Length: 121
Image 1: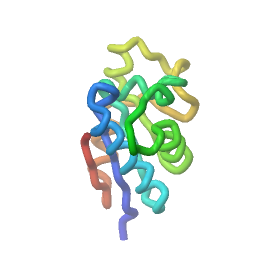
Image 2: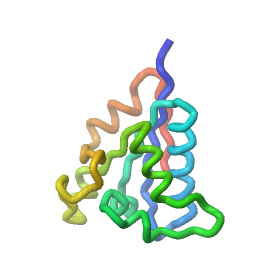
Image 3: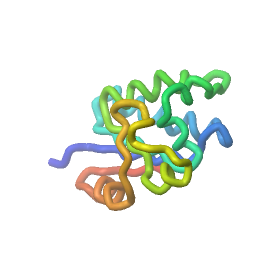
């Protein structure tokens, strides 16, 4: 039997706070329930790979983004899109410890693995 896994790709940041928060909430909830989770930061969500950026995000009645990010980092993986990082001049040495930078090959491998489900926000 295949291991259940969830790949969540978040493209929205402060520009679309509800979509952003939903993606982080789903990823953290899945991680807390024991599902293997991979959270991908792309587009405007790329900024949350940098220290202190999640702390600037606010959305009434939503769980704090730093807490959600920490939960996923503890129980799953967080990846910053290679191209998104390059467009924003974000380097591997600048991101929060534990966040990796990877590209579409890795993303496709994750979403096509047995038992994988993918969500895009």
